[in-house]
Length: 301
Ligand code: GLY
Image 1: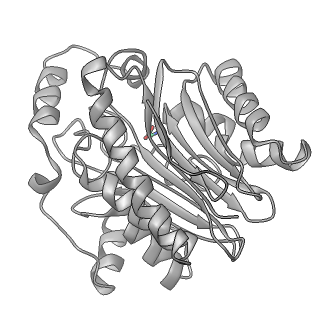
Image 2 (image 1 turned 135 degrees about the vertical axis):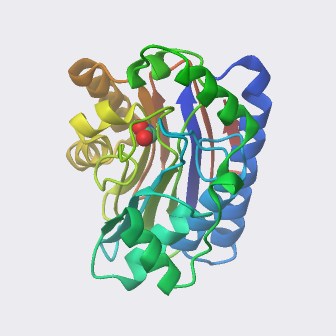
């Protein structure tokens, strides 16, 4: 069994943006699926699929990310290998074209897990990771949003997640032919965030978690709430104690997010047999998945 699932955010995606989201997750799925079906690794499938969504300005990750309160783009990302139990993550990092690739280099080449700010950029430079100008990540839509938010008296992150604000985070979970489960997540965070704000996405256990003996998860939504319930690890703990039922685990974890932290968002999950599950408490969530037991992709927004 091989299996692959991706997401492109959970929020009130307006009708006119549905097609762009559908296309984005469909193409990301195809990239990862090709790698897995040709015998490639779950790490490569997750990295390359997330790279695609980091390039697609539809999503709040890499190019197309939100702008922070002082006009900069700060990126968060993480990746975890559920077999080696190694992980890599970056927080509040600027000028990086493919944040998940920098997280992967940290996983592969560093004795640390999470590098923040200039230290992460420095590590990336030492390992040949592509740097870019802020302008290469900035798209007109986000510049315009930033200008509008700047003129408002007060804007709370919580408001952003309740309204039709385009966002979110992208992620992927893969099971390869060797039984390795890998999860990864990448984001530009929240609009007009305070400089240095870090969400759930780079925090192992919050936005991303993988344990090949149980499964893997990647989250999206309001990071401050997701952190409080350690959402990704919560899902995997639920699977460990419910016999590996990914559907129930995903649903119950989102119920917990809402009940305990008034949070909203979504999660994608694969269990250790590659059974996929999706749960969200927002109006829509962009996602796509395929397993070796399916003849075609399942793509939904
Ligand atoms: N879930 C992404 C963030 O809050 O930064």
